[in-house]
Picture 1 (cartoon, one colour):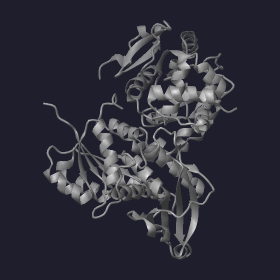
Picture 2: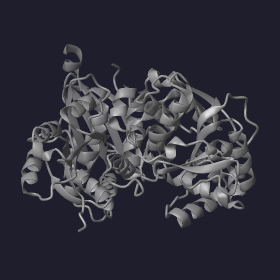
Picture 3: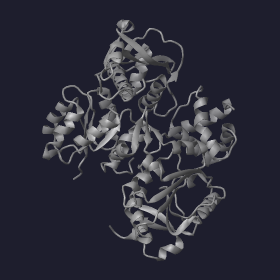
Picture 4: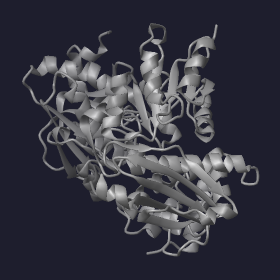
Length: 157
Length: 280
Length: 131
């Protein structure tokens, strides 16, 4: 089984956008090589078992608001911090679940974890290396999606 | 060739009026990507020329709205023709032709392949398992390649495909699903333009021609139906889309009821008893 | 008497319950919601009439969707209820497991509203004309 690639992440992201954030297919996620600035919201799920690692989405503050409003069908000035945590948690859950299907059988998905505000930029994934990354923008706001694996599990199990 | 500002304004105005979808400037690439297959289908050389024609021809404008508002094709979404196919047509033909006859089926506008594969799955689960051949044709080379590849995204397999069929006939390949070899071996794919003289083909028992006639004017509809009739067995069956009919276009067909669907049969054949009109 | 069909949505994500509620409400269903399998089993004890269909996430705390399907299938009184998984679990083997446990249909996340409507139509739970 080969590791997930940026192309895989892009295919999955396109489907998530068409399903929940851009149903008309007129406002897609646009990949770009520019590194995003320090994120304001981080949403992650962990994979354990046969494969060990994390699937992580990072958002600018505005990107998180816009995505949450679109997912929940609310105005983007209406969403509360709880709505954002809920919505970005579900987005990373769906993307993470689809990434898991590319990983060895017997991998398990954790429940999502969301960090917002100042501390988001300090989130670290100790003992893990990045496998692939998709970054770009949606409605001119930065979003990145990355897959990380912990070295020891990758070599040992 | 890129769309001009004026052409883009026409398209965005059209979809805003007809479908309440807002296409902001900067989305020209998206309009071009969606309209290119349409432009090819109608034989125009470029998206620009297609848009120019659509400003005069209402039927093309409708196609633009469709192309920018609908997404994946469904598998068995319009259940009635498929139910009629398995419950009425397949038993009728088995009775007429005997158990060893190989059914010949034509999926005449197969698009990305959902229709011919759906028919193959239904046949594999019927008494005709293995005893059929499906010819799948489309005007677009791109669509024929896609259909032949038999690879579908997660969103596509979610659309009206019963999950027992998904697990039986598809394998997971990366982020996509691949149609199993057992289905593919009875289907052949070929590029065919229905609006031009047809290639030589042996006659068919069943023809699926759904949601194609709506794109043609009356004269073209008439010639398409006549050409298709000449390739059908005299007691064959034709299925059209729910909004389509042969009535008032081609008298050579007669409408018959098959289950809850309408089907069409070459007129001479309908003097014989028709299995499908029986109750049950 | 007009009987309004009911659906039970079982998902730990409030956002996902909201999305599904919107879709099935438009299809004419009344909706009950539960945040995991255990909550759903408890709720089934109290609701009348029994929902025609349950839309079931797989990964949930306390009791997951597969355990819920197994529990429901072990009880004769829930025989009439249609069970449809709606989950990101999308490996071939996982789908087979859910069907073996007694699920009738399966929608993989992400899904469009049409996907839910068409699956419910395949199950005969909404007239296909609506879809």
